Image (cartoon, rainbow, N blue to C red):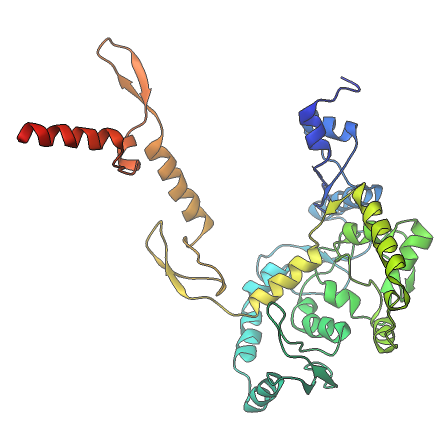
Length: 381
């Protein structure tokens, strides 16, 4: 029904989910109707829509064994045995497959057992306000005292941080480098030159965000959401990142008076109030996955479903089940135990009743029970 809107559609319209970058955004009326009545997928921008269409075509080409548009068909993956697309010859199709491999466990064991020299450097870094060397390039930098919720820095800058992670993770994992870059963000930004992610564009340069805006008309925020970058990440090559890091830091707000600062803040909040987007980037998820994997395995647990002993994948949290299959089977048994079942009545009819309802309810001494006890006490007297 064209033009129809109600309270449910209005609530859905202001909380739509992009089918590509998975961010929450405020859409228009027809998008809410498409999601509600046609179960269609909507997108927060034309950039995300085109990127999703390009990814579907790429996946179809890989399934049919055709030559991809930008990369080459590599594989099979050493963990799962699947074929995958990658511009550079790699050994694993995804970060999950690499973390499960023996090669990663060998690298991990070296990380857990540092030498005496490395231990001495780590102990020096824990001191308050010291000049420490970067663990990637060796350049000394001033390390502040770690505060609550903010650990001490280990790298002299973001370029060294990306180089460090790229050597230990991204060099083994496939990098299709489409508009939706699903993995290897550190390796992509740790290069002398960047390549355009748009199919058919042969641009090479230092500032990819600027190129996307000038050549393709895509603003920075839309491009970063479509490609999975953090909104605060500068999509620039390593030489430009190092040059910007070495420049003299001069804050713009430091030269503004109080009235100008309040006016600028109000203007920025007003521009963001019309179309807010809650966004969690693929780059941030990848960094969190890398950080968790470097912590090592967790303690041994006893499965609540099958009672077998299993190794928890990370030391964080408390896993109750050894696998998803065991968890699903346990939940299914619990639902079956409390499900209603037909019970034949005296008159021959069937009535659906919940078995063992009283067993699942906690015993509470309410006013009725206290009254019954009082009457029984009087009768005994």
